[in-house]
Image (cartoon, rainbow, N blue to C red; front, side):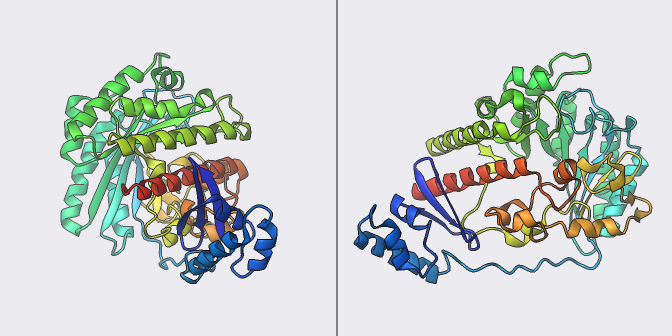
Length: 451
C-alpha cells in the first residue's frame, strides 16, 4: 500500500504514505487513484472514460506523474533502520507514589488504586533511590522525565515534596535536567498544593470526563457520591493560576457516553483549552467499547473535528491532543516506528521499588523487570519490548497509519492477545479515524492560510 485516500468534511484527500505528502484533489482524481500505479495511463483511461472526458483524465494523469517524479506520490517504501544503543538508556520513570485512591472509578485499570495487590504509599527512600536509578541508567542523556502517579499521588504529598527536593539536589550535582509531571483526579488539590506545583514547574494531567452526569457515573468517591463538582472546581483553579498552560485535562469515554463529542465540548465551554479524551480499554464489562460501536464513534470524531475546526477558524479554538499533527515535514518516522520506549527506556516504579515496563503493566507479575536497587534483573524482557516495533508486527506493516501510531499500546496488546506483536484492533480503528480527522483539519487550515 502506497497511498491512503478518504473523504471527510467535503474534501477528497490522498495521503502518500511513505513521504507523508497530503493532496487535496477533486472527485475525478480521487477515482483515478483507485487504478493509477504511476505507469498505466491507458488502463486508467479505459476504466474511467465512461465517467469522465478522456482529455480531462489525461491532463490529471500528467499532473499526477509530476507528483510521482517529485517523490510526493506513490513514493517508494522507506527503509528506516531501527537501532538502539547496546545498553538501554532510561529516559523516564512513572513513580507510583500511591497505590491507593480517594475515588472508586468504575473503569480503573489500576483496580481502584491497588493494582491488584495491597494498598500502600511509597516511602521517601524508595523515591530517592528511583531518582538515583534513572540518573545511573540514563548515560549521557541530559534530559530525564519523572511522572508522579497512582492511584492518587496527592495522598502521598510528603513523598512527592521530598522527591522533588532530592531531584533538584541531584540536578545540581549531575547536570541532569528533570521534567516533572503529576497525574491527579484533582479532588484533593488545595490552594497550597497548587502553589507548590506551580512554583516547582510540575506539569499536571487532570482527570475530568466531561459533562457532570457522565463524570459522576464512572468517577464516584468511596462513599458513592459524585466527584465532578470538586474536581471541576479545582481544575478551574489550576487553569486560572497557570494562565491556561502546562496542564492537560484528560477524560475517558465508555459505552455509556458514546456521544463523547459533547463531553469534549462541555470541557471546552467550561474554559479548558488543553484537552484529551481517550476511549476506555476494557474486556467483558458493560461499559466496554466493541466493534459494533465503531460507526457511532467514527461519527463522533467527525463531529468533533468539524466543531474543532470551526472554533479554531473563528478564533476561539481549543487544543485536542489527538488532532495535533504536523504535516509540514511528513511523519516522524524513527520515533513512530520504535514506539513509546516502555520496557527499555521507560519504566514504572511501585511503592516497593519494583520495576515494570509501564504503569499499565503494574500488577501483571510476569512482566516484573527488577527493582530500583538491583536494576533490571529480567535481562530478556527489555529486548522483547525493543523488538515489538511496527516493522515486526505483521498487521502494522501493511497499515497506512504505520508511520504515525507507533504500533499501538503494548499493554493493550497483552491484555487482548497476550502477545506484544498483535495490536488491539479496536484501538487501531479509532486511531486511524483520529488521524484522518487530524489530516483533514490541517488541510483545511492550510487552505485558509491558518496553519
